[in-house]
Image (cartoon, rainbow, N blue to C red; front, side, top):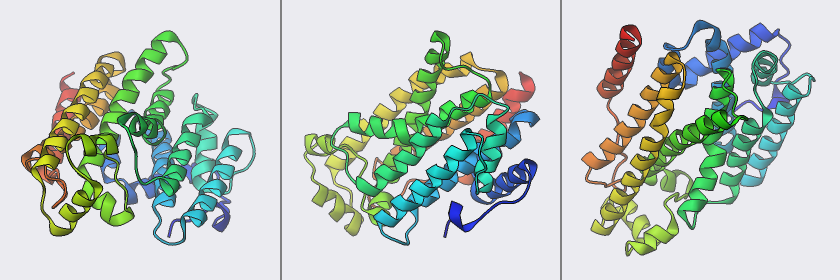
Length: 306
């Protein structure tokens, strides 16, 4: 079970809290650990704190024990502890203790952290999304805040006109990553939580129903109409990746390497869906370890040669 703020009162220093976040991230964030290789040393601890917050928040929202109402209560307590990190008070959880330290050194704003918590509240209330615009609104809570946190750690101001342009590109990349994961996890999301992130209007437009999708998952069979719809969704995600990758030319080189790694990783998910002939009902498409290793090695080579 995830440790809630009220069940742990951290008494260590800010440096102890930052080390706690690093250990937590290394236990729970294999992909992030690879990305952290390319970060400047001075940004690694702040990034561990931000990643730990994101992972911990998602874990609170996804816990299998308790009712949705109980998970909402945990998220409310978690936000209350977060607020202490930004108002100069003393948080209880080491993640928020670490964030208080980072926020004193970097231009972190509380809004992206609050929105990520709100995304997990929404997961307790919603299991369906009528339109793609509804999915995008969810991504603005669940994915886009992460990019905004990262830009802040790099000192990229998102309040200026130029900064807003970079933020828009960051949002496009984060949205692309989120919907690529949704398309990859159609089977798992339905079986684990009864959720369908595919827009209901698209399901109907391609001649499908929720019942047919549920049957396809149960029978491990994929209707042709579903494959056609998923091809459309993969193309849609690729369009968001194309928009967002313009950010790679707008940021410091080390951050650009991470952005390229994330973008290539997201596109690898789309390629995995394509290799399964757009069938995400009978089994979850996977990106093999050799592909992930190749992407990391290529990113390292770009950094070294740059």
